[in-house]
Amino acid sequence: MKVCVIGVGYVGLVTGVCLAEVGHNVICVDKEKSKISSLSEGVCPIYEIGLKELIKRNLNEKNITFTSNLTEAIKSQDIIFICVGTPPLPNGKPDLTALDDVSKLIGSCLNGYKIIVNKSTVPIGTAKRVKKIIKENAKEESNKNGSPIFDIVSNPEFLKEGEAVNDAFFPERIVIGSESQKAIEIMKQLYKPIINQDFDYAIKNSKNTRKKIPVIITDSTSSELIKYASNAFLATKISFINEVANICERVGANVVDVTYGMGLDSRIGSKYLKAGIGWGGSCFPKDVRALAFTAEEYGAVASILNAVIQVNNYQRYRIIQKAMDILGIIEDKIIGVLGIAFKPDTDDTREAPSITIINKFLELGAEVKAYDPVIKKCPEEMDDKVIIAKDVYEAVKNADLLILVTEWPEFSDIDFNKVKSEMKRPNIIDGRNMLDKKQLTEIGFNYRGIGI
Ligand code: NAD
Image (cartoon, rainbow, N blue to C red; front, top):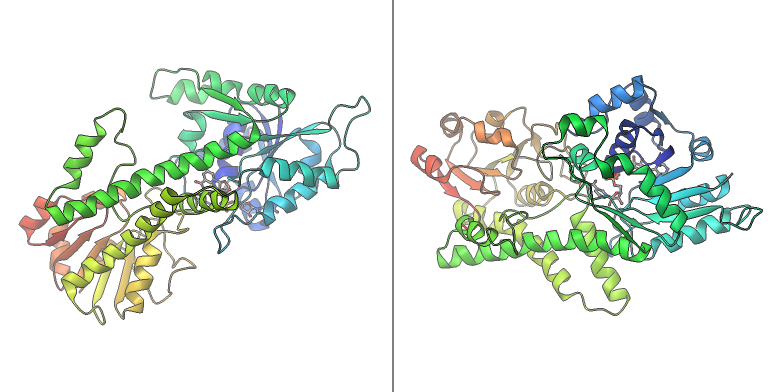
């Protein structure tokens, strides 16, 4: 089938490449020309395991092309995926400027029946908004036989950065929300190889016995809400356990044992039940805020959502409080930070906890040296007084305190005897409860975790 993907960020690029891999003809478009020219040469602009190889293979086999010519790409394809960003405005409402611009262009480019698939995470009612904009910009509303010239589908994306390729090939569910039966049937056809798990990559790489992927067919509004409610629920689980971790610290319990005991209950489950610095990234913060905003807009009370956000903001400041407990005055202290990305296996720093934490220490007059295995320059929102270290040992040199912010797997292999000898004072705050408390204490570290 002929697919156009608009916006080749984390979602669009992975979607386009995976649809090409399962046998579709895909054109990916983006307004950022530099991104398109590197992709055309097989250079992947983001860090995502397995993606680079898939781009190269599908480029060579001519299943995928990259272009900045939006008009031509839309005109030549039948199924148009919108994957542009929907960043938050200061009031929590998502900014739909890119989505509106793309919808106007799609309207003006309609030259035969097309399905417009919204994969971006968008407020409830956006499918109807996109439909209205396309209609306003289309030369005609229907074909000569009276059938619509386009249909809208809401098809939210659930991939996790760091595991995006795997999530796209082996999703836990596919949600298709539309008011058009014709569009639903075409979408089922498009996803058939993934639903049936009978494409080559699945046959070679599936870790599980291959079974059909569940497909949820619903209306567009419910589909949009499935996405928001899913992210809000996951964020709630994390904020809940962080609140429990803080209770653990007061009463002398161990949150790791508490979560293990809770997680074995299949009604609760252990995933997303890990105490730490809290959630960040490009999705949870904006999606929880957006759902709370929608609730208030429609006169529903969002008490849980607002509390979830509050607990998460507080959790970052718990790190500052712990540092103050250890160091007293922060001014002129040297702090080493491990991890800048919002989570491991990604280069994404949007709303990363490292930004709030590092900026606060710099504001308090500390010198901060941060190391991340993938991020090698200061993110835009971070105070550029931060020193980006070339390795762990440079980050900890003469430090009064070391803080682990992102649980990159390679941090398990650090030589902590060497770290101790480099530091001025052996203080560690393990913001992800990742390190071995017993071992570090034996080496002579003053170890503080979260809720342990
Ligand atoms: P991104 O910022 O990485 O990518 C968006 C891309 O769209 C950029 O490359 C940008 O240049 C392009 N773009 C913007 N306006 C354009 C226009 N007018 N024409 C052509 N291209 C344009 O964003 P992302 O992380 O891929 O997220 C996209 C959407 O998917 C968001 O709504 C997000 O909430 C949602 N989502 C993201 C994830 C994730 O983990 N990143 C997961 C699920 C859903």
